[in-house]
Image (cartoon, rainbow, N blue to C red):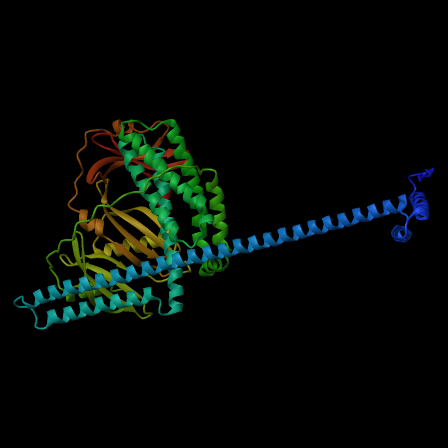
Length: 582
C-alpha cells in the first residue's frame, strides 16, 4: 500500500512539524501490526511531552548563556587579579626580609670590625706597656750597678716606672673594653669630635696645598706641593671613614677627595716626565680650590658651634646641625664630581729606631725643674712616671695635678734638662682674653724659659684656644727652623700647651747667610700677575736641609701670600697663604 504525505504550508514552525509527524503516525497505525502499533503509540506519547520552541525563547536562552559566560570571565579576571596582588605582596615581603637580612649582616660585619680594632688596640697597649716595662727594668738594673749612686734609688725608680706602665696598660684595656657603658658613650663621643677636629685640620692642609699649587710656577715646588696634596687628600678620606656617616650621605664628598688625589697623581706624572702644567691644569686646580674652600667654610662654621647635644641628635635620628652641614657640603661637591680611577698608596718607610741618649740629669732633678718651670701654676706635687725614647732625644715624663684635679703632663730632656713640651688641657667655654693679650701671655712664658728674639709668624684658633708659632729672628733674618709652638687658653689666661722639639733640634749660633742673587733678581723669578708688597731675607727648611731664601709678601686676587725663593738659585721653595696664619 502506497503512503501519501501531506506537506505543511510553514515547515519552519515547530508546531506544524509536530502535527505532520502525528498524521504520519496515525496513517501508519491503521495498516500496522500489533507490535508496530505499540511502538508508534509510544512515539506519539513522546512527541506529546515535548513543548514547541519558538524564536523568542531561543534568543532568551542564548542571552542567558552569554550572561553566564560574561560572569564566568569576570570572576576569572578577579581571581587572576587577586592572585597577582598576592604575588606582589609576597614579593614585597621577600624584598623587605632580604633588606633586613643585609642590614643585619652589615651591622654584624661592622661590629666584628669594631671588635677586631678594639682587640688590636688592647694588644698594642699591652705590648707597648710590656716593652716599656722591660726597658725600664733593664735600665734600672744598670743604674743599680753604678758606683756612688744612692742606695735603693734604682729599685725605687724601676718600681715607679713599672707601676706607671702597668697602670697605663690597665687603663687602656679598661677604656677600650667599655666596661662602664656611660664612660664608653662619652669616649665614643670624644672620639668622633677628635676625628672631626682632625678632619678640619686636614682639609685646611688640602686648601693650603691647592692654594699654593695654583700660584706655583716652579716644577720642583709644584712636585712637592702636589705630593703633599695627594697625601692630605688620602688622609681626609681616612678620617671621613671614621665618622658615623652612611655611605650615601658622604659619597659626593668622598668622590671629591678621590678626584683631588687623582688629579694630583696625574699632574705629578706629567712633571716626572719633564712636562709642564698647562693652563687647563691651572683651571682644574682653581676649581678644586674653590670647591674645597666652600667645604671648609661650612665645616669650620659647624665646628665653632656644634655641641654634644647636636652630635647625639645626629647619631640617634640623623638630624640637626651636622646633618644639614653634610647636605650643604654634598651639594657643593656634586658639580665637581666625576668618574676617575685612582690607585691606592702603597707602603711606608719604617722609621729608624730611637737611639738612647746618655742622661745628664736624674728623675729627681726633672721633678725639681718642673716645679721651677711651672712655679706660677697651682700644682701640688710633681712626680716622674716614666721615660720617653724617641728619635733624636730621650726624656723624663713628669706629671702633677692642680686643686681641680686637672693633670699637667711634661717632658724634660734627659741630657739638658730643657722643657721639651707639656700639656695642661681643660675644657673651656667662656672667652676672657683676646688675641693680643693671649700673645703677651705666650711671649712672657717664653721669656721665662729663656727664649729671646722670638717673633710670631702664625696664629691658629680652635674654640677658646690660640696656638702661636714663634720663630727666632736676628739682624732682620727670620730662621724658620728654630720654631716653638705655644698654646694659650683664652678662658683661663694661661699657657696650656708647649712644643719646642724643632727649636731644640735646629737652633745654634745664627749668622746672616751668604747669597748669590739680589732681591730684585729673585723677584723676577715670580709668576706674572703677582703684586709684591714687602720682602726680606729668611732661612727655611726645604728638601731636607736649610736654605737661604727671599721672603716675598704678594697680593693675588685680593689675597696675600708669602712666597719663598732660593736666594742662590732662584728656585721657588714655598708658598703660604697669609689668611691661614691667623
